[in-house]
Structures are given as C-alpha cells and as structure tokens.
Length: 156
Image (cartoon, rainbow, N blue to C red; front, side, top):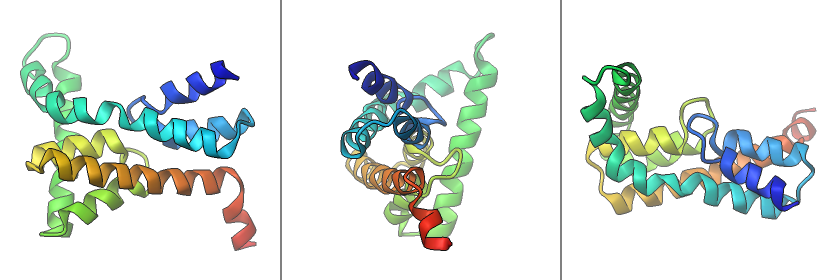
C-alpha cells in the first residue's frame, strides 16, 4: 500500500499531470479517498515554492542555451500567456482568477503553470501560494468527484 501512495504522491508532482492525473490513478488503485486526496494535495504543492522562486530565473537563463532553449522558451511563453490571460480577465481580481485557473481542472492550468504565471505577473509569494493551494484543493475535489462517478450520478 505504501508503494501505491508513493506512486500517486510522485505523479501529483509531475508538471501538466499533477493531481489531475494522480487522483484518478489513486481511485483506479482503489486507495482510500481521504488519504489519496491529502497525499495528492501535498505532492502537488511541494514544487510550488521552488517554481515561484527559481523557475522564471532558470527559464530566462536557459533561453539561449543550446540543448534547453526550446523547452525554456516554450514554458516562458506558456506561463507568460497564462499570466496575460489572467491579468486581462481579472484586472484587480488576479487572486481569484489564479485560484480558478488552478482550480478548474483543464489541461495546462495546474499549480505549475499557475505559479509560473503568478511569478511572471509579479504577484507576492504569499498571495500566490494561498491562491494556488485553494485552487489545488478545488481541483482535487472536482477530480475526486469525477473519479468516484458523482458527476454521472448527477447528470443522469
């Protein structure tokens, strides 16, 4: 059982997959709901402070490096576009926009992209972490409900 918990913990840390992939995997493994949810939340949040503090610097540094320039440019552009969309839609309500951006589980809208976008927008560390954790909690609830089949019960 510990091995399965470690799997979902590490899956929830992977960019673009995050807990959106880890929670369905946890339910496919038939792990307990509450423990799986909590482990996926923690795994998804661990990279956030590091992304906020170092990702932008690393990506800017790597833009002109031979082997990593393509991926660095891709992530800077993706994060920049996400930040611009948040700013355009939210204006002064960037906190709520970031929370919803992270919380509504569409591909590419998780904690990694949201944190990078927030750092590119110049949001404070405290605001970013709070908005991202609330968004991750929301996304976790949505994904767990979907994994448990609650949406099909509601819409049928």
